[in-house]
Each structure stands twice: as C-alpha cells, then as structure tokens.
Length: 379
Image 1 (spheres, rainbow, N blue to C red):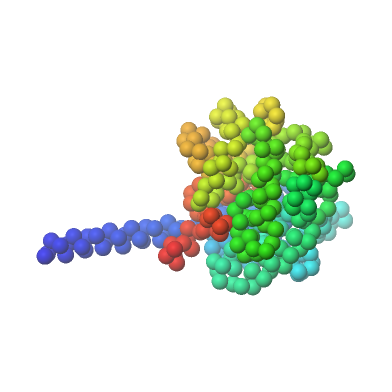
Image 2 (cartoon, rainbow, N blue to C red):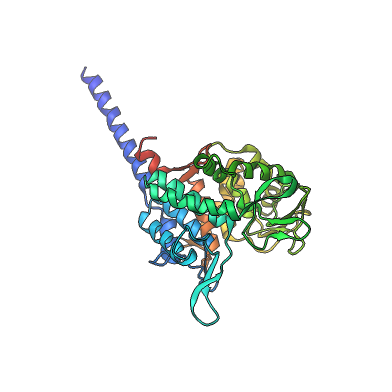
C-alpha cells in the first residue's frame, strides 16, 4: 500500500509540474511582440513606419491589433483601435472605412494623406475584432466589426464578370478600362473568409474565397505568386502591365497564409512549387522572382525568412527551415530583425515565427486559437 501511495504521489507531482510548465509556456511574454511594440507603437496607439517617413497605414494598425490580441495585450489593443478610429475613420467606424495612409503633409501638419481604404487592412481589423469579442467576451467589439463589414460589402465587394464576386483591393483605383480589375493575391487568407462566414453566414465571404480559389491555377501556373494580376470580364488572368511581372513584398504573404491553419490545406501548401525550388536553390527566399521564368533578383529580406517558416515546416522541408532559423538568429538585434529594423520585416516575423512557434493558429472554421487562451480555459 505504501508503495502504491508513493507511486500515486509521484505521478501527481509529475502532473502538477507538467501543468505548471505548460502554463508558464502559454503565458510567457512574447518578447518579439514587446520589442516591436516598444519600437513601432506610440503610447497613443499609432503604429509608426519609422524608416518610411514615420508614416502610418491602416495595414500597420490592423496587423498590430491582431498581434496585440495574440499577446493578450488588451491595453495596447484598445490604444491601437482608438487611434485607428479617431484618425483614420473620422472618429467613428460607422462613418467610413479606415484611410490607408496617414502622415506629414506638405505644410508640416499631420493627418490623412490618402483617404482611399485598403481592403486587406479592413478585413483584418473586422476579423480581429470578431475574434477578440469572442475571446475577451466583449460584444461591443463585434458590433464595431459588423459596421466595418457592412461597408466592405458595400464598397469593396463587386461582381467581376464570369468570375463572380471578388474583393477589390480598395474602393477606388482598381477598376480598369475594358471591364478589367487589378487584384492582389495576398489579400485572400482562406481562414479569414471562413471566420467571417461563421459570424456572418449570409455574407459573401465563402463565395469570395471560392471564386478566388478557382482562379489560382491561372494566377500561379508555375507555382510562383505575383504581387498583382489583372482579371478580365471573361475570367482570364493576365499580367499587370503597369508593373514588372514579379512576386515580391506582397506575394510573400500568400505562401504564409495556408500554413497557419490547424487543418493544414495540403493543396495550398503544395501549389507553390516554383517558389520552393527558388528557396532550395538559393537557401533563402528571394526578394524578387519572375513568375514566368523563375529568375530571382535582389537581396533576400530577413522578414521573408520568418514568413516562410510555417510553410516550409508544413512541407517537412527541414533543411530549408534550419536555413531560415539560422538567418533569423544571425540578424536579430535586441529582439528586432535587421539594422535598421524595418517595420515590414518585423510584421512578417510576428506572423511567421508566431505561427511556427504555436502562439496562434486557425481552426477549420477560421476561428483564432491562442496558446494562452486555450490552456487557461481548458479547451
């Protein structure tokens, strides 16, 4: 009997120690987020792109809002949301979509430089608010999200000929002559449209994703994603003749998104073999790649190495994963990547390393799963 009691006690001690380790791991500070927030986010919630004229963008506000939720940083979340509302939405999310660009005007004053919106930022803000409303049990956040979604549906979702409903990158400037539209592949994270559909099943969200997915064989026929493409009324994809036929700073996100879900989208991971070949050949993701010839150019940005980590892990490309981790270790200084630290590199790192390390992921319905939240509530 004494032996049985001793074994039971030892098992209980092991269980307690194990649970304590899991709790500490789940609630350990996200040091990369802290370094990013201290460097790029003002106390009032403005996200500053320091190396680009100290401007602010709706993208920066949207991504930082998401990262604050992942970090369980409610104070910064509220600051970022409030600054976005007050400065990019004329003080009211019901009035207008966020202006995409804010900064210093020619006369020295600061304010909106371009009132046009950016659809990816709009969707990220709405999606993050819905997830935050659920996780933090704050229904007011969901009400704000629905105000944005109503405007997105009214201004950024249009029927594009034979392809059906798709999302414009912005309300203005992307409808071309001859019944054509200019589109951005990185604006279509599958999990996001699934998550929006869960909250708004009558909305166009799943239809948008399905229509886009049908175009993917034309968009990336050689397994390389372009930054932009043009779609005509007949549903034919063609190059954007106003820019080089390249995949670069926009397209890098298209390799990241499919790898962040619990139910990994195998087709989504494997459809980009051309870009994988470029990484295998050069060791690091190229800054620019010709979507037709596969020719690479430029200097690989350090943020790209972080962005492809979840994708390479999902493909079991162990050697390529190690190459990226070594590059990140070599170029990390005081928690940030690169010298000077560029905003976009840090954003890609928070997405890529956060997903790779398991700080967050998305379930089959597009709901955000957080490491700290899942353990705390026993789910």
